Length: 389
Image (cartoon, rainbow, N blue to C red):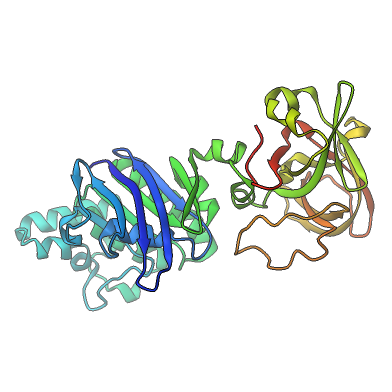
């Protein structure tokens, strides 16, 4: 095991396209770091530069204390798990897992022992004599991991390894991968576009957009304190609601105007975000998570001046929760996520999602009041899209 350090790594292709800009990250020994971002953001390119499959245009890459920019992939002591498994169809599971050891000319007895150890960890003992074609997608992915494990590398690289699996199996496999990584204690760099994977698996999560690192932190901090509008919208499912609003002050009372409606802010909002005071009477980007909204008929004791009036557009009953979609007459905000809907629709009407209690009786077409937890609001500069803290 070893630390992996990226020091201002860049990737510029011959056609001039700058895919990765000054990416600096440090993975500590045994850490599970997830790099997440939308399609085409440069995350897989960064991973391939670490693996040695892409040439580094600028910056330095270290594995332990060794600079490996010009070291051949096979000599970097790094094992990669690919999206498409990359198994040899004519070989048994045993031979697929043991293939890296055969290349190293490891003695047969030792090779078989190491394969059995890896198969035991991955619960593949009963599949060792089978061919990949007879395995499920999850079993094939475990075989690919077994092939990486037997190499005993300094670090694992995983490039969207679960993207070919169905939804139920993805949930199972992400828990298994995280558990195996903790047991082995191998430094792991994991790339995905799925922010749910990122949040549930990583010790830390790094968010990248257009080749630029946006924020890196533990999942809880990333969710609670996004650095900018893009991170706020990208991390969380359903996404954070983002609208334009105006901060106002009347004596000691602070409020935020959202179109034709006004919400009173608690004193704690200004206490926790003192920089807000410099933005009075300015237009800001205001964000609130779906779970910070509730049907006021369910939360009847919620203050009347912290409610939004609206009409239900869509209802999604999910059992443990009900998602209610509605609009408010406030300008919508483009988060900058290329994977999000291209059309914002009527930009003067922001589409809002609330994660309501299943006890709500709200139905499509109903006029309702929505209780807003104003203490949990987020505020961002309208021009820079940076968080106001």
